[in-house]
Image (cartoon, rainbow, N blue to C red; front, side, top):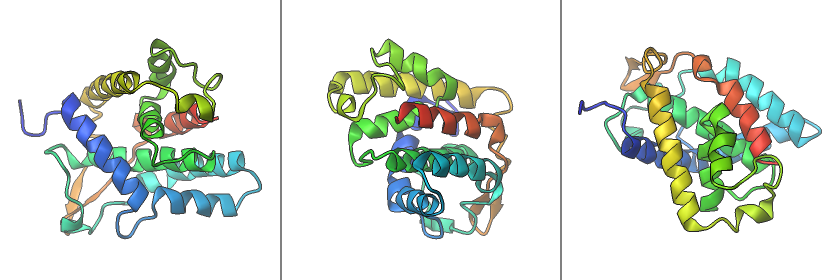
Length: 207
């Protein structure tokens, strides 16, 4: 296996890293909480704020060099292309912000799992359906808290496999065009990996 090859275990470690950084914030970037509150303060409803966040994420953040110049501050837990980690961080933070706007507790492990599910975009409803959960229908806040631990683990594994397939597709790995600058990374467009689709999926899942 090549040092930077994408595997399920590496994806799972990066997901955990991205989620932790999304909640705590990386120096120079807003945390998911700060991002959510910022957008909520500018709109009348949570849905309007979420739509605005998704649009902004698609245009601005996708090309903003979000890890530029952070140097040694950003230490990835595994050897994985930094552009993949960058994309996952930006998208996990956006989904977490949407979940927070909808009133979910981001410190809940089951909410965390559903954030990861949203990363699979159009595959999300299929993954949840196979786990016996109907996204955007019976998925109420109370229902989240009753999902057995073994089901959560199974969902996480399915998400890992789906993301390995997604990031392993020809051309996707190179989409970010990672350029080292002062020890950091300039992230290129992540549109091609479906930031808009992922945002809409999160809006549907976290009802």
